[in-house]
Length: 613
Image 1 (cartoon, rainbow, N blue to C red):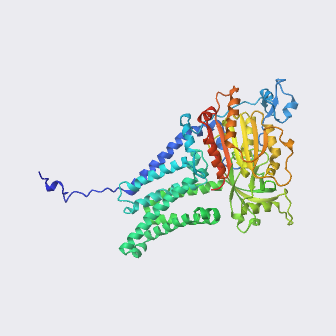
Image 2 (image 1 turned 45 degrees about the vertical axis):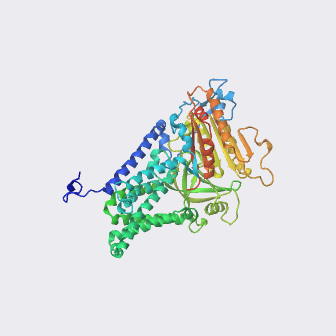
Image 3 (image 1 turned 45 degrees about the horizontal axis):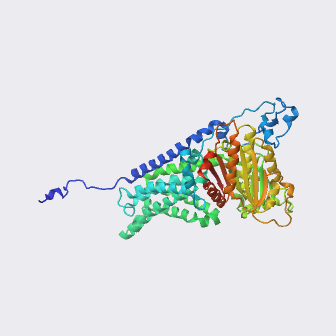
């Protein structure tokens, strides 16, 4: 049996079959799918965002630095066990540290003596109890500062982009335009996640620093796609012998210019330049973008929509930066025991949340020829709405911070005197970062782990939590601080403040443990009677984080068993501020907690504020 020839030979009039599709439309729909994934994550985080509507200040605070004429004073605490009506003497007294029996009869009153209304914030956990077991493996660190959860996000992202690279095409080395479309379509993603005012991060309740890993990865995708497209055409034209003729065309020349700018940015954004020559890293980024946008605009008009979106994100970020910028006079005081410069800005005393930071620029030639042009981020170490204003604690850790410390010590006559300080104009931009949708006072327990100058974050957060507790707006039952320093003398300037925090916290147990890793030089700076209780301890060595977290869970569960003002324990927050290695250690300690212990305390969540970029 034979097959007719006309059944296997296509008709001359039949249209040729092809596996190709319109690259621009294909990539466009892939980007719609990426947006759908982002929207799904946003919907998952939405209940936590809605919970913040419990208080208007949770939404209005944390955006603009400002000055409040008369900060509202914290309520007073009186012991009402002997009388239902407190005496004027009791109303005027400050809150002091009390025993558990006294706390039972203590109550909060305002300036007029009226009882303060108790209103606890709602608590929405990061993950549902059903998904809580997944939190442990996802928190595993693959490398320093990089978790399994971040790796999975990148795997999903690159998998989505591999699909248009390989489907309905002859291959990335044949269909050269497909790689270009993928690269340019991700340019808005790169700009978005490089922005300090990241719209998506705001919607998800995360700080822009937490998405920096995604910015770097998406930028590499753009670099790969741009080189596959550009070098592919250069090779093709060279093979055909008409490279010079092709490159003289305006569209092709601008495409080559954009390719050079992309690689220019990539080379100077590597870790070598980023860590050693930050000014070069920043300058090349700005210069490269100044060439990329107009070059792509001329190269292919069909790319204009993606350029519009990328420029929109870029302009929005810089407009908001301008809105967030303040020029003020600051007082700088050296703290030699800590090796820290304390910067006080009394003109600004409100507008931030605990854990947020600002970028500061000191307008003085004393910091070097270009020192005035350098902008550095530092965590705010004071409470919003307080009397002392905005305070920064800048530790000597580099050239600029060392010059700043020396500048704070120097006097107009050329003499140096510690503790006096100087006045200087500064430019402050912020606030940025912070807890996002998380409300620290909605947890039952909060454990702060700080390393060195990371104490700024912990102090601001603890002071704010104590103030919220006195106002009757906190669910916290215990607050613990674990601070690791090199020299025990670092505790000297903060010793009175630590004792004051313990005394002011009447309804919440505060415990502070300070660890020093180096033997003191000379005489030990404290007497044996300096630490009479376990509320404030000073110990040598490094903290055993796992054991301390276990003890925190036990105390929280024990205190929660006798409380009648809440139905359940609402979780434990573990907040860490310090170098990346410390954050990794905390994440590891939390991952080793038994699932049963996690459930007993209502879940354990980690909030990170790490040094570096």
